[in-house]
Length: 181
Image (cartoon, rainbow, N blue to C red; front, side):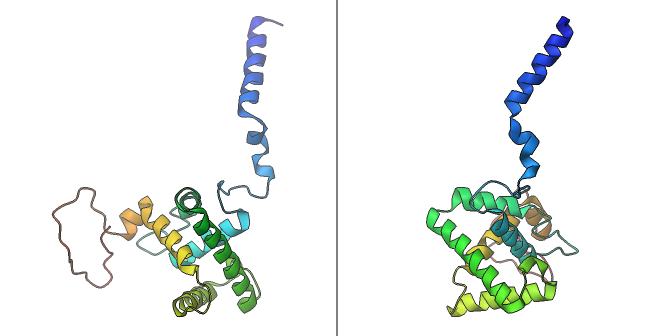
């Protein structure tokens, strides 16, 4: 073996040891594509679908999923919410999934857009009345915070100005005009 072959083999072995088997086997798990955090794969995908149903694609701006709100919701919930709120969010997702199965007989992700909207309106109304879905507002908050913190949410869904001007507390809006961010 010459020196060039020995160096190449050493570099390959060292690189493989540093990268570890996780790089090669990462797509083998069922949680592929789900960022690490509080939510496991199924609740994560449900929350992502709820966010995308609450904030869908429009002509003016992309929806929550296209804006990348899913990974940010996982990060926000994991790093910024206390454990009690994390548990409330996980429980709210489980309750929402059960309600969806009871009302429609299938998972939220499989419903038609009109059925999704009806279920979201129902969950919101239940939470407001205090008769169920008590923690649904927490899921809505996660979706809205994540979306409106994204570049697409801030610059396309809202009217964003990179440099603040003078303070104007009340700004009249024309019908259909986005809010200021």
